[in-house]
Amino acid sequence: MNPRTVRIVCAGLIVALAMSTAPTSAGVLRGASAQAGDSNAVIAALTRQADAWDKAIVRKDRAAIAANMADDFRSIDGAGTVEAKPAFVDGLMDAKLTIDPYTVEDFDVRLFGDVALLSGRTKMTGRFDGKPFTSHYRYIDVYAKRNGRWQIVSVQITRLPAP
Image (cartoon, rainbow, N blue to C red; front, side):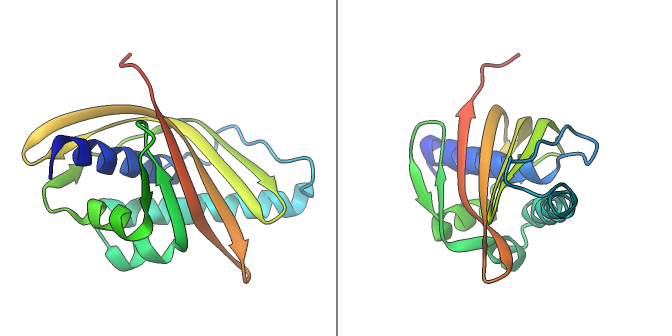
């Protein structure tokens, strides 16, 4: 895998992982159209779903990762490169990639009917082909509820300068 592909894979992974490890005590905002009681339940369910996806990514569980993603999933990395579901999942499965545990800051969920925006900021570390890497990103993940099921349809990341 060339260095650009490594950056793309890491960027996509950062987004995916960042949203899924968000602490439940983090600040949560609701879209104006959401009902307070219902939105709290949806936010809790999305947080659990995102956490499960994170764990699947760390353990490289291809089936669990893919199940959380819509077939028309798209990822846009910090360089503007667009990646579809198959390439995104294949990148995460690369045996050369190892992701260390990380945390999410500034976690936020906003609901708009059958669309949810999950965003936050993360610092990720790990190794690719034995070489360490560190990445800082702000992300937004878009989930859509289709046929009664929430799935991630889009990920966008923005690189942040190292602190």
